[in-house]
Length: 209
Image (tube, rainbow, N blue to C red; front, side, top):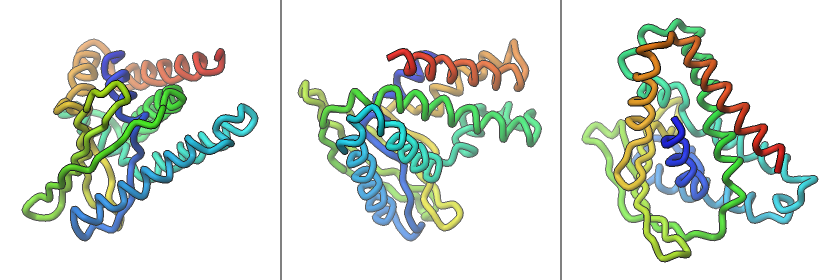
């Protein structure tokens, strides 16, 4: 689980998940750019640098991520075939715990943002128009360029992110491998408990800073 979290952090430090009307790949890209501007403005705001006001900024970031990332879809794809063995309550609990873990990890790492540049390099729309992939390249101050792609689908009159690929490595597939291994020796409730515990550890680590 630790390697997947590190992988996620590297992209979330530089990105935010998006909203759009599901008309075309272009609308998804436009929404990504607009949302990215919002999140970076929050990070660069003097309020974020102020310890007394930072929590308010982080709550705004949390709200954006929860609104535009489809954690149910992410969760079902991540767990894979084992998802059908989860009850409705377990599915909801898992998605909520997973969201907390990813967001808490993001907020813990977000202080490391230092102005990396993002270029939008391509867009792919499925033949049916029901899937979109926005391709970007993050140029770090070190000179390294990291390709990052966002896979999205239309849902509830919106575009939702359901997977992120970093250097062609899918977060869904990365987590799926780890969760499937855990589910061989634990049940869904135990897996959910593990994810919640990891999320608490992240929060406690942040509180000690």
